[in-house]
Length: 110
Image (cartoon, rainbow, N blue to C red; front, side):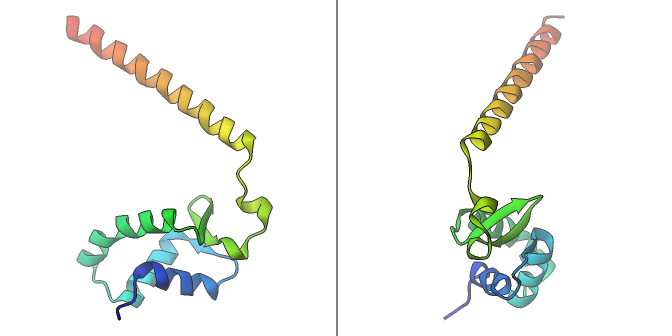
């Protein structure tokens, strides 16, 4: 039975109670999996997706990863305020996109 990269990451973080940046985690995983640079470049995006979707892991800040089981509730809980901040930033991005779109249309008329 082959070992999956996500399970390697889980085992690495089990031994590292404080967690680690994604870059360091990926370096250890690709070494453990025996990936060469070509294979690693093909696998990194799927690994990041799996890490993001797997409920055992949590992205704390600045792409710093840990296991949820190692974190206090306050570190991983999403509050209503957090969701509002995300929603507000999405609205700001929508406004910027619409402004860019108008500028592009004005340029096309000339």
